[in-house]
Amino acid sequence: MLSAGGPAKGTAGYVAIEHVTGTLNGHRGAFALQHFGTMEGGSFKLSVAVVPGSGSGELAGITGTMTIIIAAGKHSYTFDYTLPATQ
Image 1: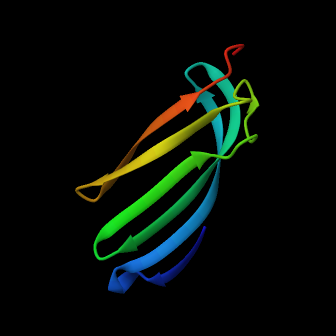
Image 2: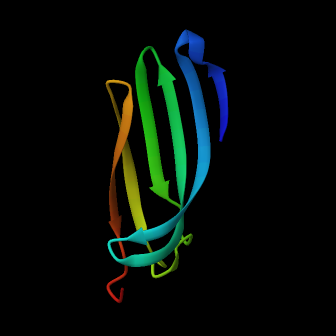
């Protein structure tokens, strides 16, 4: 993860690549997520997407996006994804 700005002043940005390995709805494999986020004036903008071509094993060909929800100081997420029809 790389970040810059002044988080104490409420302005910053970050980028990151996250490697995910495991089982997703019965399909074993791995893929990478790319994060791009900014904060300014108390507002957060965040984009997280599956890196194209990063899927392996039974997750080869995966596409999708992740939404990170921050509420009451806790993080949760939703992951909307698609696997090729042959999976």
